Image (cartoon, rainbow, N blue to C red):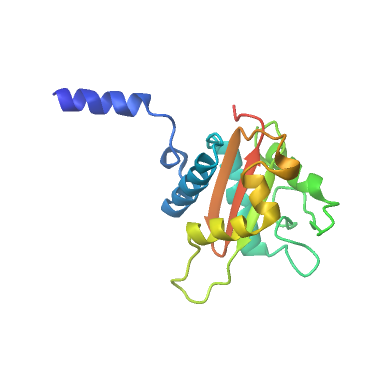
Length: 181
């Protein structure tokens, strides 16, 4: 009886976990790896956001199914095959607002969204993205790593929400500096 009581207390008082937000096992691993990396640098944890998870999930599916990225449009681009505004996100960042506005466009999230994306060429039917590879790739990229650990132009941002999706050959992480309601 005592064990059941402690188990009930544990369940009732644990913070909302990624599993409760319907992340896949690999998405959970990616979230945990990012939080461990931030913790090692003395940075605070970022709460999972149902809204940013939905945006991340929508975008990885758009990237995989509709392929809005090409030689001129990078993986922050959105196709014209959904209930959203399409855009070609170019390397000069002139279409950045298209990314920033997506959370408000698709969900009740009130802040901007800032995305990092990873693409892996899949070689076989059982090939899949591993969370460790995505994070390692982002860590090697000065610009992506800066977003994850709030450096450079991201230093003034205090991440209050995060969303994660892995689908097909894409992984995306969305950061927001407004808490999800």
